[in-house]
Image (cartoon, rainbow, N blue to C red; front, side, top):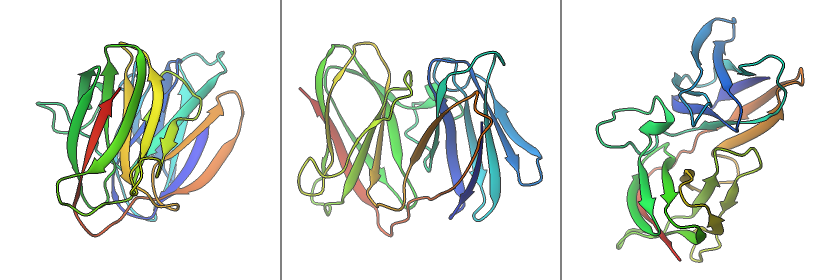
Length: 229
């Protein structure tokens, strides 16, 4: 499956797959030159590429399965972000480089800078219903936030929310399974800009074109992400 992508702004992005199959990723420029490839740096047997893209330049992302006889669904994710890093890591080159927190509840504070979308991994130690929400940080101005909750083992659409938390804040309420890794993505909401997720079957000889945008805003803001029962 090939995806033709162009970005409105330059910057480092994370390209990765989600699902249960052993997926490969290949990144080519417009002339067909291979720029990067990966096999198992994503979650489990998924693939992950970190690459610095140039604005208004055509790229092609190719997704394949390890076995050419396998046909199944896979989700391709392109996120305009470097994520939140775990201690001792300078960049995300594999899924396990992403900061993770384990518990039945947690509070995390982070800064969103220009052209950023932040994500980290939450691993619940109790199977139950969780509320994931953004809140205003101290006296900083309220920012219209958006939340995504991604289960990297499935290919169904991720959970997402804009204003369910009130006062421009996002809120997701859902059951989470103990010991499972969930990717939580925080961004400022805009109907045109943001993270884009696509899924297609590998067996289809199709090509998809699209324009992937990156968020741009002109201030620093701090948001607190809290999870409680």
